Amino acid sequence: MPSPLSRALRALSTVATLGLALAAQAQAFTLTSPDFAEGSSLPPRFEFKGFGCAGDNQSPALRWSGAPAGTQSYAVTVYDPDAPTGSGWWHWSVVNIPASVTALRADTGAAGGAQLPAGASHVRIDYGVAAWGGACPPEGDAPHRYIFTVHALKVPRLDLPADATAALAGYMINAHSLGKATLTARYGRPAAQAKQQ
Image (cartoon, rainbow, N blue to C red):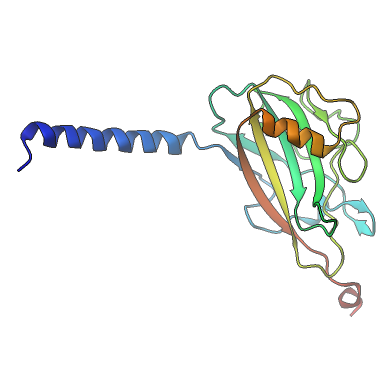
């Protein structure tokens, strides 16, 4: 039969474990958007304008919270692993977002970077531009996944060359990562024949 002391120690250990679990839950690093929910369809205004697509080519608003301790800056990426390229498709890459920033407004991805937080910059994506490039999956494909990720970094800035690609930025982001939070949307375009009917 356990002694009163061992029962008390076991109860104390249980309380401490629960407290740590609750603290970890409270500090979970999360990413959300007022423009779409996890797993939902990306609204058409975020579609690319070009390549046969006719959206507004706007980036959605994003918000995050619960970054790991020691975060000195953020990066945001958007990636389509379903693009028929053999290597996916980078739709957005933003680096050097100050640690004090916890949201990006809609259309922050506009070309030129005027909407970006001070100090942040776009990285060249697979459309060949340093800006947001909206969804534009091939007609008739099953809806593609668009994985939005905010990365918490342990450095105040990434020193990247001016012509860096999103893949190079991704390498540097992962080398300095403290943690990340993701939000996934889906987007598809009906086959041309189906649209005509």
